[in-house]
Length: 100
Length: 202
Image 1 (cartoon, rainbow over the protein chains, first blue to last red):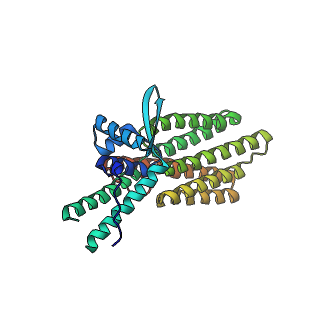
Image 2: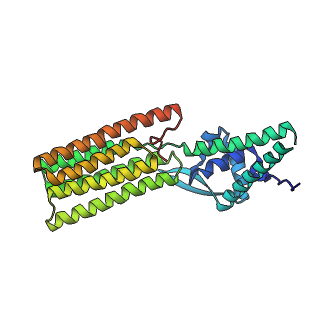
Image 3: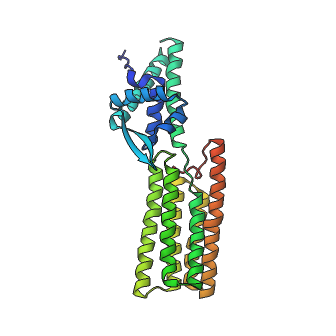
């Protein structure tokens, strides 16, 4: 029986997984848009995005638009790769569960 | 693996699918740009007919471009950037610059002829609408492209008066009516939070 893959713990958190999935469908997204889509609090969202940033899965850009600060997030190539591998691992695990 | 773990894995997969779909559902409102540019065309035509034809079109087009840029930058800050959104912008910006450069050059060189000008403008608007409609899978917009192309062909065969009427009618159908239809559709879209083909840009 082939060895079952381990799920990436950085991505496995529900909110972090939701954030990476959201970012995979857009080029760049603002903090407030991510907050609205996930229904998360500022503190929790900021903490989870920081973990993704530290893992190199998202890149952050800060700028001012009409004198208002904006924090923009984009998925990095490493993040896309990690999400792809996570989905493959999930499917493999589910396949193994069905076969068992 | 227990049933609970299996369910959790299924939930994770479902979460990924839902969030990817949610990201793509992001709507941008562009119906107003069609109305704005339709009004700008009418202003330029009226100004050229009753006022100063040499400056009417360039001044109106520059003013409409600036206004579009300012209003678009305000609404864009609320939505995330998407590849389709950038593709849409590329089509219309490239078409606008091409038309502006060509028409100014023809005007300055004294080779601007009304039938050819209307035919060229209608053809390019048809091309931009068709390209946009194919990317967005929006049949209604492809209908506008057909109207523009038909107007371009008509401009080659009809008299000055008929060409003007054809052009004014095409602007009304493809800019004003289509723009209002787009705004209504986008408004419904924002209220329901769902996404249908076409109206959800990018």
